[in-house]
Length: 372
Image 1 (cartoon, rainbow, N blue to C red):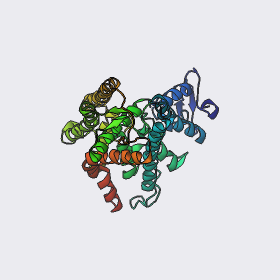
Image 2 (image 1 turned 120 degrees about the vertical axis):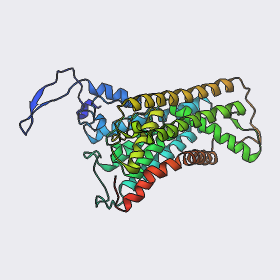
Image 3 (image 1 turned 180 degrees about the vertical axis):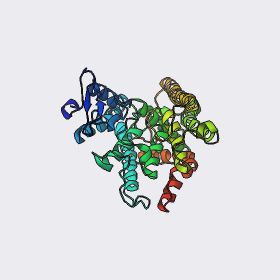
Image 4 (image 1 turned 90 degrees about the vertical axis):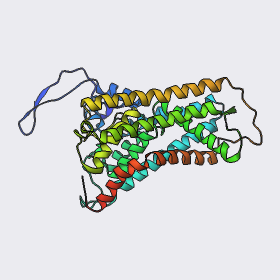
């Protein structure tokens, strides 16, 4: 499908051509379409070309753009249905799908609202700088939201060029652990961690032992869920704070002020979430960032996977309790609303101070004609 749209797929050597200006230019070729199909469906994000999916040889037409955007989320989204089949209740899967879809659409609409607000600095309501000019602002924003909601990291526009609130949506997607729809498989276990926390909160409210899928959620399960949620956020905030007060952390910023802070926050959020996209004004190819981002990747990956496996191992040994009048059901809209609330509250309470110093204050200053 990609080849039919003009995405290149060959083993030819690089030709040298003369441009309209009479300058010689080397044209890169290669088996791009097959690699792009793998990177999008596998939510990897490493582009065949350095410009990633903003390169015309990698993303040629509006239809190829649509194919690649859908490929970002199609397998991860399908996992919710698979999960419903595995646990013997399709409704459980559809509830998770609905929660993820709601959060994705909310992020897209917030980003679009921000992008189409009047910008007094640029004297326009739809700044195109850094966007994918061939496909427009809408396609750039849908992609930026989708690629950060999954663990892909492929881009078709510059995230650092997003308006402050649209950039904040991308950051929040990363900070949540990419649970909307997340990576292939890892988005599901990230969401299930939040389910355990939600079930625990609901149990406290009604005064009953929390259960999920008939299994009692006990102290060990909650402790593991808390570790899986706290550790990545702790790494993001502590590493960002250290980078913001050291010469090594500040030496390669592309911008000053709150946007510079956003570059650092985004870098560590992307690393912890194993995403790969960036606010590219920051030069992360320094000794400081190579080491610190590498450590953040390791902690962000394994200190979520290990607690998730520990919870699974603990639950599998428990007997399933029969459904009773006191059972808190998790396959209806009430639970979906509660789950969304817990996700938003956890993110808001954890990251609001950092976000208020970065994209939020940048948005307020932008409306007063101040840029960075």
